[in-house]
Amino acid sequence: MSTNYVKDDFSTNDVSGAIAVAVVRDLHVNGHAFRGFPSVSIKDTEGGFEVSLGLDGLTTPTLTLTFAEGKKLAKDFQKKRELDREWMKKVQGMLVELERAYGAKTGR
Image (cartoon, rainbow, N blue to C red; front, side, top):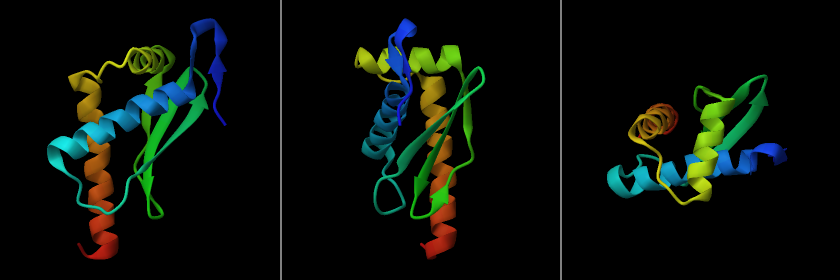
């Protein structure tokens, strides 16, 4: 279930959406070594969010975002802006971890 931050005009779905767009962007540029498309999981924490990617029973290490970072990603997503390089590299790092785990599980 999404959490709405009415005062700040965004939701956790907006943060997840920003991460998903980055995953699609990486797919276009680099391709992925796994079959399917990873899910984006987000959890509210005190002062921010924890995000991970999952696929076929595998989950990446958690990426921790402050509230301000999550809000910026959400606002960029709402305005249809791409993630900046720093965040794109973080998402790519998560995808590399998922590819490694997938390869170890499937032998690919």
